[in-house]
Length: 170
Image 1 (cartoon, one colour):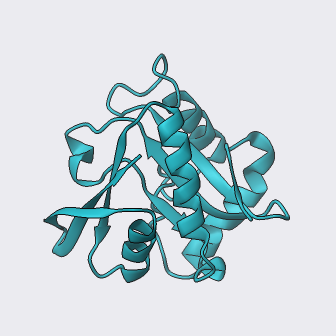
Image 2 (cartoon, helix red, strand yellow):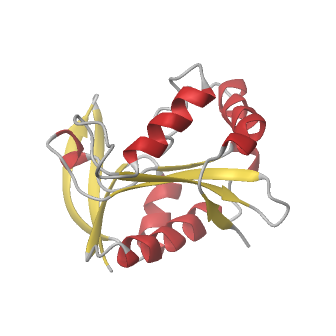
């Protein structure tokens, strides 16, 4: 089993280890991490994701976003996922959520369970549907979205890659 937990100061070392595993595997993008892959300071990242979780403190250029780590039974961070409560012009092709599972923990069903847990959070926030986008070549993520009720809506091209948008009714 896994559970979704909010980032905290106490998770700093674990979070940095999580991030490093992606980098060590040549992956410089961690989807759903709200730029954990782009920031040097965990404390600054934590302040940003904490601020963005509230309508009163969200960055004016962004949308209210809840960010969660997925932790296994031992408390180890195995993934990260975010929930964007609304979509602005920039996000209309990216959707309400992004997620990543650490390379050593893939193919174990974590992404499917993470997204399933997030759907409950979204419903509890009053959302009636979620939109997710995925590069067509990312077959594991397409399966994750489909297993959680995703229905194909449309396609678009991003940085030369074909991507598809799916909708999940909550």
